[in-house]
Amino acid sequence: MNTAGAAPIVEARSVQKHFGPNHVLKGIDLTIERGQVLCLLGPSGSGKSTFLRCINHLEKIDGGRIYVDGELMGYTERGGRAREMKPREVSAQRRGIGMVFQRFNLFPHLTALGNIIEAPVGVAKKRPSEARARGMQLLEQVGLGDRADAYPSQLSGGQQQRVAIARALAMDPKLMLFDEPTSALDPELVGDVLNVMRDLAQTGMTMIVVTHEIGFAREAADKVAFMDDGQIVESGTPDQVINNPQHARTTSFLKSVL
Ligand code: ADP
Ligand code: MG
Image (cartoon, rainbow, N blue to C red; front, side, top):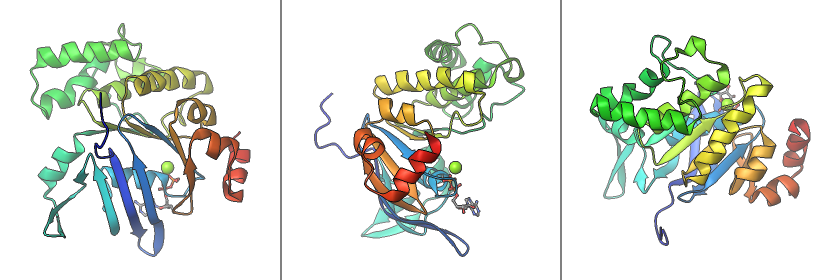
């Protein structure tokens, strides 16, 4: 596909966020092109989750702008002025963005397939038969084609997380956000989830992945950004940021996780 000249999928410009007196995002500038995988690294409390939540407008920003696929998130621009969107408009915008959390948050009373088709049928008003067929494809994609009827309690953490990924994909997002998707998993279950994410990257999905899995970032990322204290300290290719960091803060963080 020729995407020359296309708008970046995500463009953050001077994004500011406070929680009361706590200045959490101090002017974030970041661009992600279509089909790119960005890995966002940084110590706990540096603002990574907040930034992801601002991208899909789960948090409102206090300054700057965030564009997703050329559209300003959460605001309507007219004559250079921005008006806050109505909740319904925000929900519609958010539907184009899939999010996977550290905790899988599956509905416990629904099967794997039930979890996946819930939003396509309930929100996007897809025909149940169509949603089920697509849901089965997605379960195959995440290696769980044989577990469609299992309830979350009958699945391992890694399997639940793969269902959560399939559930996010079921809404055909143009962007996937992952917030430490493997941090809550037993070490032996991490690999399967990372493999699913690698395969997803290969399909051309645009992804932002907050992770401490440096190996994954090194192999799968097109771009790595290191965040500390509400700022992007440095960004570049995995080779630049992970193998040849320019800042002492990056070096000491990498030492702590490698
Ligand atoms: P990270 O994901 O990098 O660990 P977070 O974005 O979760 O960092 O947190 C950044 C800072 O914002 C922390 O100081 C945290 O306590 C604060 N924070 C995050 N969410 C909230 C919230 N909903 N209300 C108040 N403070 C918050
Ligand atoms: Mg976090």
